[in-house]
Length: 293
Image (cartoon, rainbow, N blue to C red):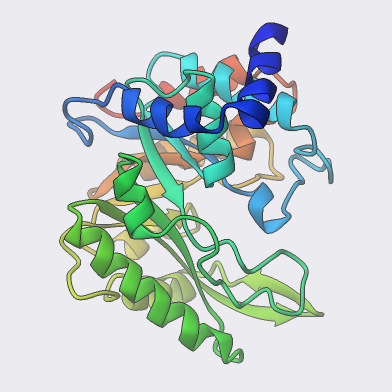
């Protein structure tokens, strides 16, 4: 991102807010949004929950200009299909002209701020189905953490079910990210065992009045063959923020991408903040793992 682009972005934000709606209306849409090959979506909705760490750096995502620069670099690479983000980031990218021909998924429930006493309360504080449709986006993503010991889960399930129904009513994808989660020493932790993931999928895929436009977003874990057998819904693999060596992570993605029903990757920090900070190379490696590319 050039300095003059950043300065223009700041001026648009301050003096020309109407440019956001104009840029959304002018965005060139993909003629065939979801196919036929596997997708690579860059995720950038972590900051909205106060989750700024990446690759062992607790404040890696603190600089918005740097994050936008990394996002623009990633989106310019051949084979990258789109982005998943909250309104603030989507609108920055729209104003920068970085979303033409890309899929754009709006992140919806970001209320469960990381590390808080209310973290399980995943309220819908960002996009809703109506604003996603009005902005011409391609779908909405929702986090669905199921905490057996936390009563806030009931409200999350109800809200996610309503969002799935409303997105489907607009003919838009509902991307559901289910987890079976508990508090451990005061921190919310996902149970990544196959059994827990299967339980989470069973609940998540049944949300809403129809599952016709529901896609799942799940992590790559052990025994993925068994996990993927738990659903017939299209599934995107969650890249996460791996602590392992990148080559081992990529190998696990490659294996999981070969399973029936897996339709691509949704990766954020692993590609935007790789250990060597070479975003382009990390993205190119991920694109090379996809089938049909």
